[in-house]
Image 1: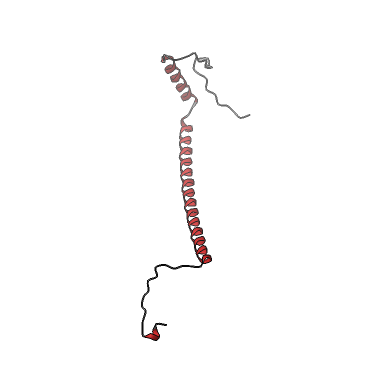
Image 2: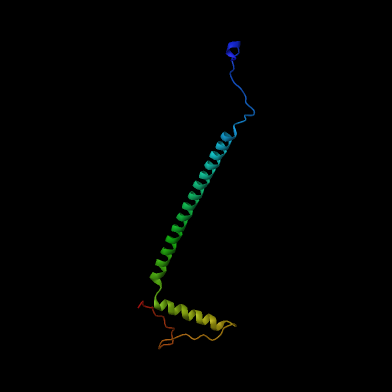
Length: 115
């Protein structure tokens, strides 16, 4: 329309556009869906990182248990039991504790077998 009058419009600034209610609602629903999808992606990524952290922690615990099990012998456990008894005997708050002992007076340490 303007070209017929010799006017060339290069740019136009629109300040307020009123969209039909159905179009405005559709745009709003689309933006909401995109935000929800982005939030879900964030939650999934966070859960993946947490799962990786738990796996690394479990691997560390398993390795520690493996190292401990290699050195956890019956004589060592007896030594630790004796040390614990000595500390308890020196404590002013100790009570009588009955501990099964072997023929030499050393606390018994036995492995429980699954039957």
